[in-house]
Length: 127
Image: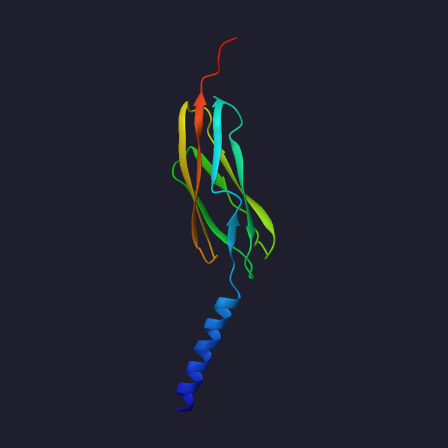
């Protein structure tokens, strides 16, 4: 009987700790619109985010939907209240519409977040 109570008490404590200490990732925006840009222009943009939780945030993986988009994740933990960026570099030598997804995986309460980039790349006009 005592061991059952001890196990139950430990389970309640564990669940309480999990609820109280949770990282939370909040992005300023989940879509970056490049607009219409010329071929070869700067393709680097950043998604700004904040850890709005009460525990350290660890971003474990950032993947893009294709090889033309290269995301870069923070390497250090992000403490509660701190801000950081996920940098995205799109290959602007590809003319046409941009519609790509960047998937962010972390220890936040919402473990997987989908970010999007969009826009159009055109050939520069001859002068």
